[in-house]
Image (tube, rainbow, N blue to C red; front, side, top):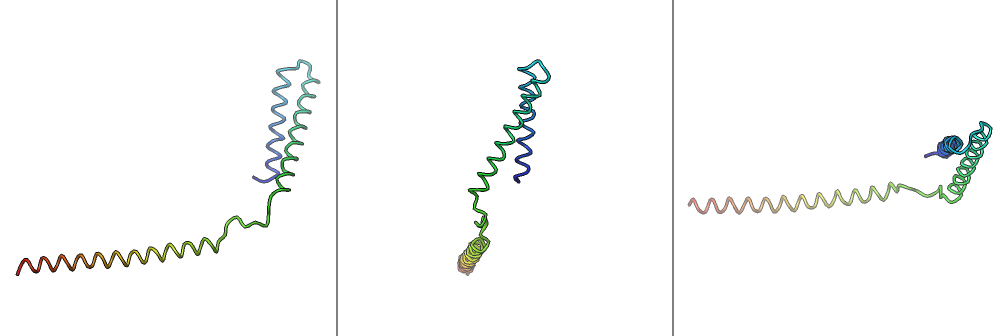
Length: 108
């Protein structure tokens, strides 16, 4: 989530929270407006503080997806699969040769 979206979300959340609290606790329209303004301001400032700390402690130079290491692992797995396929083909071929030799020996 981008920073602007995060701030906008908490701004709207603060507005509706203040509106609901204002309607539940106050009867004068000016008092409701005051509660809404303070709640919105509080959530707006907390969102900015949260984003500031996030940006401060985030390591932007860090690579999140190491493509080269991933490709090396995929190549290794692919080579392993090829080797195992060769082993299975050899084993399967040997068993076919044995079965054909048994069937030829039993006929003769």
